[in-house]
Image (cartoon, rainbow, N blue to C red; front, side):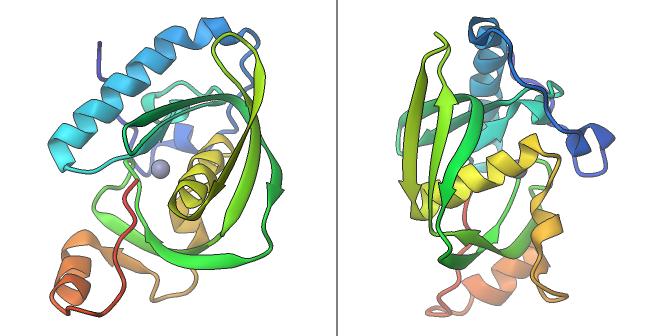
Length: 178
Ligand SMILES: [Zn+2]
């Protein structure tokens, strides 16, 4: 179960467009390493819900999530639908764990993807699973949360975020956890 190094902001590989997976069964080893890397990140940082293959140096269209104890493996995912209705949140990323970004995502999405046996299926999501999926889908296109910052006040270090928002009960703005 090798956890791998997570590429950090500035690594040009994070900016490439990931390639389709020709044979989903061949993705098993990458999925295994994504699972191990997510588990290791959680141990080190105390949060973490999703990772894309490019973040461990494999620019393939593979996303791995664990949300509320449920694992999701998405191979060759594509949006079927994104709601016009949006919401705003503080987002973060394994590739820049000490930075938060205020941005906008669709409230709901529907994504078609393959599993490891090659079968196609649909995943419909709303709220926090929806924004997580949009974050990971962006990685497959080389897009990072920092690119979606709403304006000049939308970037915040984690330490400043804690100072600014966590110390003000009822401020209402909590970070979303990748
Ligand atoms: Zn990320």
